[in-house]
Length: 133
Image (cartoon, rainbow, N blue to C red; front, side):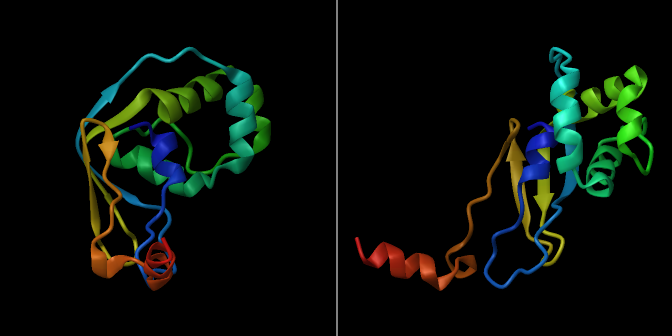
């Protein structure tokens, strides 16, 4: 699972008001080559909550990015390459995503996160919708 994917996920547990960002528990990570695309990175940058992403990078042992980043840094090829590596080439292979509010662990196996909720974690509205069918 790419860190970009982790960044897009949040905890949907009933009653959780602060389900983002999910913390990473890393048992195994891998690097996979991906073609460099500066335009993609520049388009993604404004949509990123930088601190959340840097914290995820650091939990995987990647410390090459600064604690803070601003859009003028996108003119630096060196910065873009480090951003590309972290965002697209680092993959969580085994471990867990952890809800910041409840501590609930969502396992990641073979790079696939299991975000399924237990019955008691689901909003009641879902059951009302299902009962209509």
